[in-house]
Image 1 (tube, helix red, strand yellow):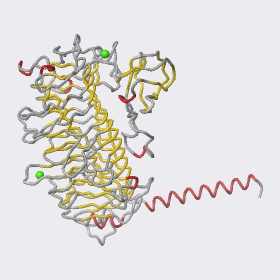
Image 2: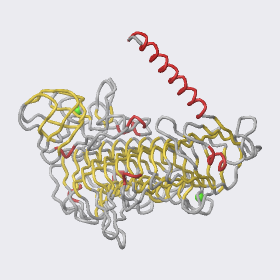
Image 3: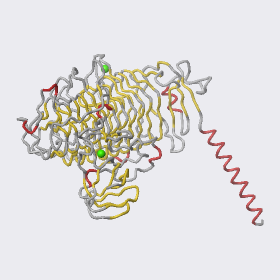
Image 4: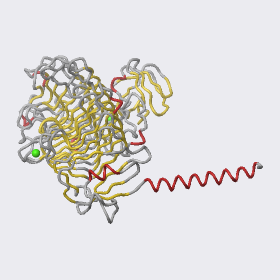
Length: 569
Ligand SMILES: [Ca+2]
Ligand SMILES: [Ca+2]
């Protein structure tokens, strides 16, 4: 056979192989149906559907789609006989999201991979949780499901514990779910509880009503993003980051958790206790969240952001290297005396900068003499600046302190009898930041002429002149690269991990540029674009004008923007 002929034959073989493969894929991947009018002896086709979701899930294989017709399926306990694959996941979905009801139903995904579940409505589930995932499990997506009035149970539990091996349970996405807990006489435990796993993207979920801790990165969860969720009330905590549960010799610390762009507020007739509790975690970022309380609602003893945790029998949850910036908190405290930021026990390198606290009953408090840094924040119209007195090691720089809660607050909080001080310097003490009149978060944008404009502090400065992407600074601890490494197979996620999560900054006159790597030990940051700098140039979250502003919003005549976000120009 000459070369030309061989080529032709090979080509034909390749073509046939491809066709066979395509045909095989079509044969393998099927669409099946379940209906309350069906029968499990049927073939599961559109005309002859199965009766139970449980039976359907025991039959489907990689690449199959199981469509569930609307109806009440009662109490089914569902497991999967097979897993999907990276290219051919198993998909189970309600034909109409929210119209497929399971009463005290349960789905077990332990030992399963590459499964997508959409649109199921779980009502009054008991005994643990409606959906259980873990040890091992991977590539699981749960979306558009409703978890309603769990009876002391969780909506979704991830529990990947094989002696604490977090790498066994990974690649998890939870989106557009609703965790609903009405005042029906019993309370949901957790909405979504994440334990012993890696890489979770939790976004655009809706939380309503009571609930215990609604979204929780609990024991030993590494690399998580919780963003754009709306929390309409929460009995205890809205978002928990690294719950304090390190008992015995096991290290339960969570690592690299980003909580951003969420909205926390109380629904009518419900409590909203602590929007965010940050405890047993290393490298957490809490940014661009909006939190609102109501003066008439009892917030219990919750603060806006609780730092650390102490519980009998456990070591204190120690938040370590936590960046809290660009958050707006309004009317935190309700009828109680809870401050916007409260420290309970141990805190290591926690930095609170460029946030706006408005109308919070109390601003800060601590039960433990921890060193927490407050830079470039606005405290606007509080009743009392200090809630608990153990704040002698707090460091205050360039914060705008404008008290005057109904004209009663003290103008100079350094004279507050609860204050041990000293705090230096309080450059904007007593000056009105002048907000734009707007009922929601935009209310905290600065008006033209505000004394907070260009009155902030550079977070750090460059050490030596240079050009390129690698910059030595005095203190790199103000910045995040998002995570300390590339997230594997991040394209699987619909967002979050695929977006740049590093701090958006300005170095001298260059910016916005994105931090892509931080060497905390040597105080070196790497950015995404080559720039040039002089020795001692100011470095801060991206700002316009000559200096950073004080507060969560950077003023710009072209349109003010949340500090550390891409400006609207
Ligand atoms: Ca309930
Ligand atoms: Ca500025």
